[in-house]
Image 1 (cartoon, helix red, strand yellow):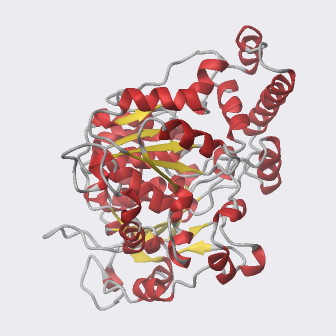
Image 2 (image 1 turned 30 degrees about the horizontal axis):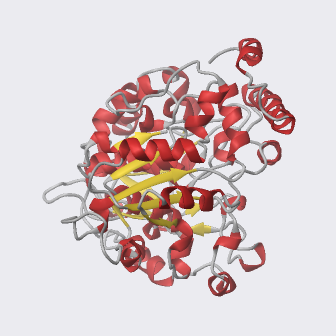
Length: 482
């Protein structure tokens, strides 16, 4: 990572002084905020709750969920209880102590308690997708270690939760994992003839593993802090395989000791070179291949499919399914502009699978702020240009995945409408109480189905869509970035 001095020296020639004075002031303040924030990260303070709040204030709380996007009748109901899904998780057939090894009371289990609370700057502004990618890797590690993975609820960051605090059902709002995904990671079956133990819930782990060995991440991570992804994976696998104890729980040290305590942490996810080898061992694994959206998410997609069917398709002989005719674009707007300036200031690489070398659009290093913003915070003209380059001859449906409620989305709709698109956005979806709670996963599924997807390279949300599209056999050229 470049030094703070280098970053400061580079501000002069790259700063777009032709911008209006008010905009220059905002950019300058964002740069100063970014440097202050980087100092906090370097000194190990970034994961403290007050520091997270400070960081959000610096960048305008840019990922705060806009409750105005929820239908008033749904908002009035408050968060869902998920009685049926929680009942399903409680009654999974593997929750039975009488089962033979490798399950039951003689089975081997591993719980990653270090995955639940995401810490540090990027994780203060956590997306549900950032949580998903970590759980998948931990689940695959458990599988390779011949242990049952212990799945846990998704715990919401307060500023991301859809529902006002007076409606909360618990002090720390959560969503059951089976509301978001399905497959072995969430307790589903492995492939036919696969002897691997099935994943179990955290509640069952407490029953079947009243005693357990605690492994602190400080025992493993210092020796592999800069190792390639496959070596990080193998180091953890060897520990879990050789440990004689049936039950293991992975915990993290005090936050001042490690601000990124995950098994596969952000230092890894923001380093494409280290990730390449991890991708190779993960993409064809059962954990990856058998991953599916939850029935709840699929019900929302099917419920809204009619929205993407134009009355009379512009393209003659076009596909009867809207997904084959769709381009999906992930737009991070709102106050994300200041966050993008911060990413440029610290020269942040693209996140996760977005940086894989086989994808057609690559991150360009050491570019000026103006060119950087075209990729991180594109204008209407930038979006229209990208749409024209990636459209192809058979696309006539556009889906905009966006958190914007400032009017920017309307500008894009007007501009793209002149190009003949049928345009839908996230806020057009008709969702019930439970579907609203997992609306980000609904967006992810629609983008995974689309013929062409254009994403944001710094987003874990985009990274998860990249994985889904490659896993599902989509052409790699159909995955693009601004």
